[in-house]
Length: 462
Image (cartoon, rainbow, N blue to C red; front, side, top):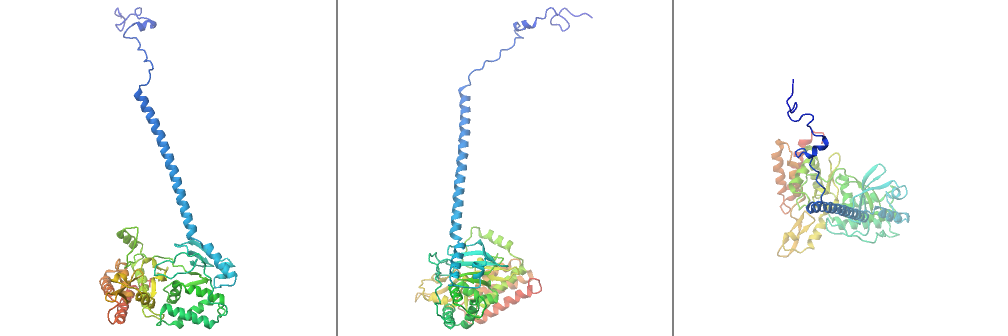
């Protein structure tokens, strides 16, 4: 086989192929020269400088934000620490009490454990005001709530906290040389001024003197009398002592001076209870009600808790120790035990009938809105005399039924709901100025209690 003149591929013969070193002379095989490096255009250079500057700015910004976060966080921690040290002064309270105890000025059932044996502990601080110290605590195997007053106790309207005072209680009453009979007379007159003439004052004095005998030796010493007298100046302690026998308030466990410990109520506030007065909350009303309903116990247990509130209303309506008005039905004032028994955790929600009348007599008014005591107690205004009346517009039972309406109707059994709603509305219509209030009050109260009891008497919650 022969190849053409120009070789096998028809391009060049072997002798006609130029050498590699001459290839650059052929224009179509000449290698293109690499472009020379020229200076970057000014636009690209500016762009690079812009991004470098932006990155530096971002770094500075994040550094500044980090510094600002640390500064603000440090300030918040300092503010919280300062607020804690200002509000939580349990050690100062204990030192002041133990100093008086070791000097023989005061004594009480908890003094030895608090100051000598060191078995009376303060745990978590719950204080909201510097002069009203509140702690969770333990005393041996008992857990409770410890309260201690720093400064003098100032009596104000329901719900008001006394202003901080620098001077500590003197514990100088009764004075040295006071006999037990004289002290009994002092207690009698004090209780009478608080509860009025209708109460069984003699019975109240007997309860107080039994508490005053802290070491249970059958006698009340002068230091014990001083401690109990200081406690009696705190209205919620006196009211708590009167109601603890019926199980409506946490029991007083011990005291030393005006420091005292009560039983701890494990569950509170009472979820789902509606307050007839204005309420303040950070959450919208609908969301709050939905959360309360979700967190509330089952209906039979709610019925048992409700019966506890009705029994409280019954016992303070012309009861053994006089009549009282519930002037704050907020859920925060109530709690319940593990057995779903109601407890009034803050006795400041109550006011005696005599004290209510005394306050109303001193008020001038133009409308009924001027005759208000606490959150839920109102009286009528006599516009002719411009003086407040001495009778509340709504009795305790009507306010209690108003608070229990949504609490009981939500989740109520279908067969019971209609009758329960009818009785609750009849109860809410009760007026303080209506004739034959005592008979109507008792009838409505007994009917409502019987209705609830028939529904839960066969359950384990009864």
